[in-house]
Image 1 (cartoon, rainbow, N blue to C red):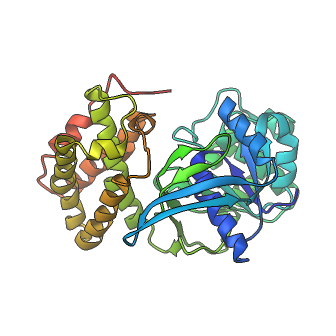
Image 2 (image 1 turned 90 degrees about the horizontal axis):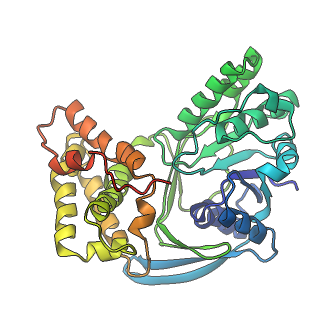
Length: 378
């Protein structure tokens, strides 16, 4: 294997977003190269995906919805993934890639992907066994790369964490200090590796087994520009910008907040187990409540920031995306890790309103921030 892109995570989101982007860029010869996927957590579903990724012919991504007033229904056969490995079984091969041809690392390890694991420690630096946590896996791979004299690498975390690149960099650096690794390596981590803050936005509503996904037409990957960065590909839905925060804020406070608010009502109201976002939006009472939340408790924050017009334009897109008749986006899926999502998606809106000195009661947000005894935690 000589692929220049190493991807941690096998989720349907990555399949229909980053992997599809790379596939489409390959068709235009505007890509760094192929992808090797690493299954970083043990689950039966991801194991089946790894087997499917290693089967020739690629996997399907069906893009369904409306775009510019026209119905879109396209199926892409994604062939960007050249190989798939399991961290627990193939760690020496993962290490060989990371110390050799890889130039870019992409990750989307889920809502709890940055959590550390007991038992991970410096004894794993030279072991044939993979660390349990994703940050420790990265630390081991980058340390081996550093010792082998390989060039620094560009890392693209896609987890839904504000300043995800900076957060992951600081976490890995703290871990290196805890493991008492040398100052030269710490400088390599902090100053030579390029940790990119990025934002991904696409609703991927269903999996196609064993590999594949159903997604909406809307997609964007916003990347914060940094000196020395290596892009995995050039694509019309990749935006490189000096100002990532406005994109992050709109997605988090309008789209993600809307999803989590609907999930909160789904949990508290004991609504149908298979209810989708589309069905929730068709409920006049629930739709009115969500609209009131956006209008009275969120948009005034954007107004105070001087982002009135662009936030309303984005919200119009969100309404269309929530009402996409072709996607079965289940509220049960959105409700996973619900309490953590509320802290990331709802609480910052309340905090920012207070910081800006706005006299907003924000009753719906404050009520939703109360602990939910019915939350669907794993």
